[in-house]
Length: 358
Ligand code: NAD
Ligand code: DAU
Image 1 (cartoon, rainbow, N blue to C red):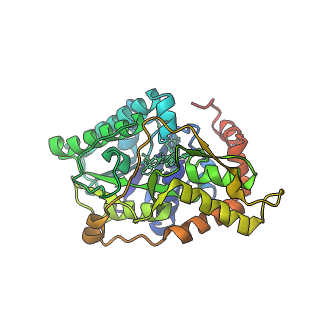
Image 2: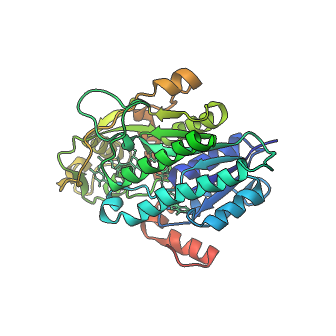
Image 3: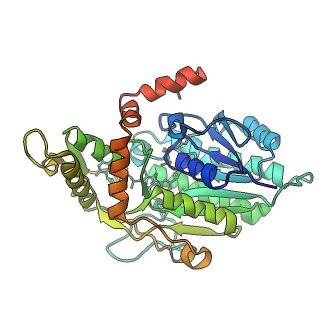
């Protein structure tokens, strides 16, 4: 039987890229996209994917236990790709409550729904798989050397990363305690099409395009390890299809960059593609060093040796070509960018689904 996959958070950045990938490359799969449509969820990220036999969208909160249980049973879900989360570190510092609810309680609710269906005596479907999508931030912060491996001790340092670490522990505990077929992925920073412009790369792109100041936290020397979103999505699909239950897999492409390097790269590409600012000056002059993020982790760097050796995964996109492709995508999709920036994407789905936003 072809899989019925429940994708949570499929209207967000990575979830939408993942839905697009499996819709295109696994055409027989039935995709159930469950998304609450918070500010970060945008159905326009899935424009062109129509409701039908292979795709269903359900607007619901993953913390709604009766609704989750009903959906698992009604659809006979056999595969879960769990992306839904509050994902932005700065928001978690300003208001952690939603992170605790969605990231911890939401994950717990999904694990319980999966447990009651798959471990019940009447389950006769495919061998099930619960893929929990997580982050390298659970490992804390690195000094100048070393990498995060799957055996690095967890040391989360923001409310966001603590909530993700907690959800990872719950997912792992369901494997050890109940033998629920759980797999976990911990990935580094993603970039690419459909990313909400609160995150560094789309934020800097938009501000630089419009000649606005480019806020760089602290000294700009914090390091992130960047991965093109499609490479992340391919890795997740590979773990679903070929990974082992109870295992976790680190995903990253060895693209460590200081934030200031990322920002100047975007400035230079835009200068080249769009010409200098109206003042005749380069966009680098818009850079403004601002107050640092509280508890700002200094460096993340993933060692992806396990997924490379065991599953044969390799990233296809290096940073130089990935950032150029990303900027080309944003420049070619101004309608999407403008709707997100001016908030009109929210009107579109409030009209479509008839409810106020969370
Ligand atoms: P995002 O913020 O762009 O999207 C999150 C999606 O989840 C949105 O569509 C939102 O509406 C939905 N959602 C939020 N709360 C929900 C709830 N209670 N019920 C149902 N839906 C809800 O996030 P993203 O950047 O695409 O990240 C997706 C996942 O990948 C997250 O679990 C994140 O921790 C993880 N991750 C992200 C990165 C990254 O660089 N963005 C890297 C590694 C791991
Ligand atoms: O490492 C994976 C994580 O990457 C994911 O788990 C998170 O969901 C995702 O949001 C991302 O977290 P970061 O905090 O690393 O991403 P962000 O884009 O917010 O910031 C990247 C770096 O840029 C970080 O060091 C903070 C800095 N920054 C960010 C913003 C928004 C700035 O200097 N200026 C800014 O305006």
